[in-house]
Amino acid sequence: NKPQWERATRRKEENGKKKVKGNVVGEVKELACVVLKQTLRSAQANRDLEGALFDCLLGNSSDNVVTMAQEQNVNYSAKVKGNKGHGQGPPHIWTMCGVLAALVKEGDKVGRQNAE
Image 1: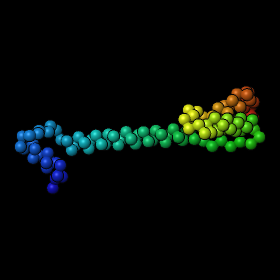
Image 2 (image 1 turned 45 degrees about the vertical axis):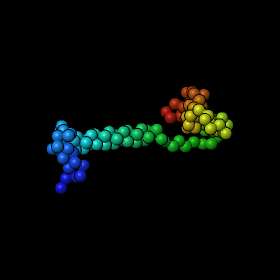
Image 3 (image 1 turned 135 degrees about the vertical axis):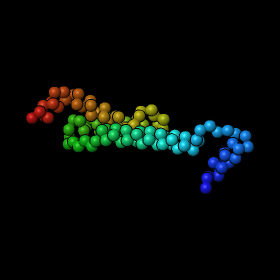
Image 4 (image 1 turned 180 degrees about the horizontal axis):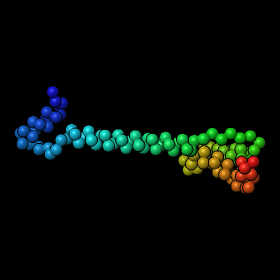
């Protein structure tokens, strides 16, 4: 028992109104399979990327790195408050900038602590 749309296509072929080359059903299934595989690959790539990027950093609240990150969060909040189309980007970028600025200020001390 064939689906209705396939029977209609076959009837049109028989009447000479429309000729379909190849197996349309097989081609659609093959295309759907390719699209599904690509979607799954993209989803896996995103999961791999998220696993590499989303880490939790714990630190003492009195550390220079933590205070600089908090200052950047306050700066971000002040700039975006009440400004709907602020164009400042997401807040985690500002936090990371604070962390990096603090690490640059620390200089060689960062490596020494880990070496000991």
